[in-house]
Length: 133
Image (cartoon, rainbow, N blue to C red; front, side, top):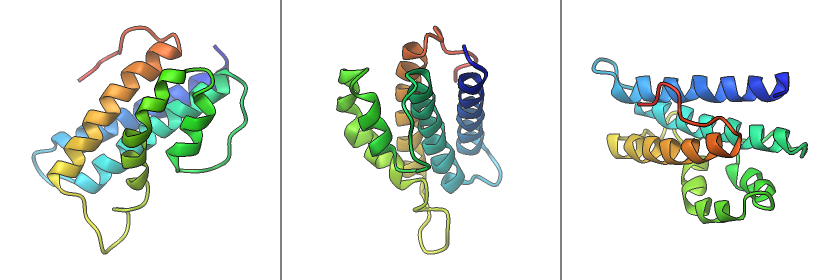
């Protein structure tokens, strides 16, 4: 595993655990942040997949083009389109005043993140999910 790939994975895992912490907080719950970090986790895992396949990618938070670039290597991932589209909106939708995530948004984001993370880690040869929640 290259150092660059390891860094993408480590950053993705950081976002994974941040999303879970925010979602599970008993005091000062921040659903906006849980949604954001869920999106970031999957963004970084998709980018890690592209790094592994030596495919260049743009600086973007839109998960759809990243997914499209991965599909030639993992055709079944095209079934993720709706989930990826849902997560993509969380990159910016709740980051500024005017919109706020609710508990249902955060639950959706966390469920999608967990499901896709498991598949992405498997595709990257990472085996079982470490410290899964």
